[in-house]
Image (cartoon, rainbow over all chains, first blue to last red; front, side):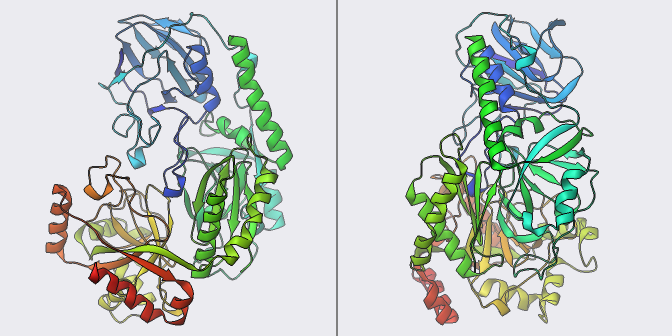
Length: 323
Length: 291
């Protein structure tokens, strides 16, 4: 079977759980920004959790089905309709051959995940179907979906309609969104006042927020410990000799606006990083709209590890719930 | 040179050999990242060597961060004991300096540059104390370079020139990054040259373009059919200046699949290099002529 894209939405891409193993060549892991939501959507339609689905940002696509399939939409609250009739989010529903899937305006969150029984079956690039436009890898010829595209869908077992992830088992950021940070990397470059100020200040998501990175604004400029810049680092105190970037690492060019690198991160560069968002909170960033208030909270490794376990438990609870 | 170990969140160990760039730091980083790869530690998912540092990504569900840190630290002595030599390859990269495409682009983004009155090469030559752009270009291509890191975006090499520190060329990046850089631009920022593997944003000064693709996701380019990325850390590069005619000829040859990069196998010994840089470089470059 296949899906016909009538309208692609704003920026809709094919994503799975990404392509680890090529970051040393500048090719990032990619994959769903909110992996929790993609996994849940796939579970609802009976797919392997890493099957490729659609990641729709702020606006949903319009899709025509040529065969009957089971569909689930998770993540952002982007009201879903089949031939104009509303369907519930985080719930599996049937779309019949000839019917059209569409969406209303976004209510909350930023990215909705659309899973179709059988999964999207475009060719893999370096072991993944995830779209990475900068390297022209995955997706449809290395790009996001466009009107007129026909997406092949794999063979899937149709499980029953109506399975649902209850509200209390979903995970979306609060207001302000709290993002936990493990200080490290080039943390020592900041003065103690700047180290404290970063966590005291109120931040908000800036307009430049995409799969590569999320920028934040509103806090005080960060001051650096004075030093003679090392050879090869560049003149600005926020510069370092170009090194690797961690996923989730927070760079602050010129000490002004923090940028958190996400799934399509550049693999390295010449800006200092003050630490990284803990792995358990990376999914939450994918659901932040511009202007959302954000607080960064300082944690130690023990809390990062505990949070990661808690997040894994949430997924196993959903698996158990759906049987 | 004192090694610094730190965490990048709960999934990365970051190891900085030195906060300044040097061939010693690069060699130590490369040999230690190789030692981590050879140790084959369960839970390691990515090992990324950089100019004077490297990063290990791991799955904390498989190995605890503290345990991962301990295992990496244990390997430092191996890097210290490792002989500072490697079997590698030297590659000749043709460069059309002062080409029309980077010229058009640098004029388009002039207001983001330190010196809007001239070109990137005019500026780079002047602040490095050269009498002419031609003399600066000569310094850029006459001595070879190490690929000290591959990254930023798909397959982009960072290159560090094999010359004494006082002969290193240094230029700042653009005041504000450009939103466009032609594909295969040869750029410069800090003490590093680079080759932009794909078209896109960039902050490095632009000196020229190479007609030789270095990243091909479709793997249609003949010499990229085995793998889509050309460079790896440790490669040695010799730039060769070419004119428009030669540029067009190579572009056409790449298109029909008859272009083969000039490559020679070489051994590099850091101590021998430090003892006689000019002589070592001459031997490296001669290997290209024999091949």
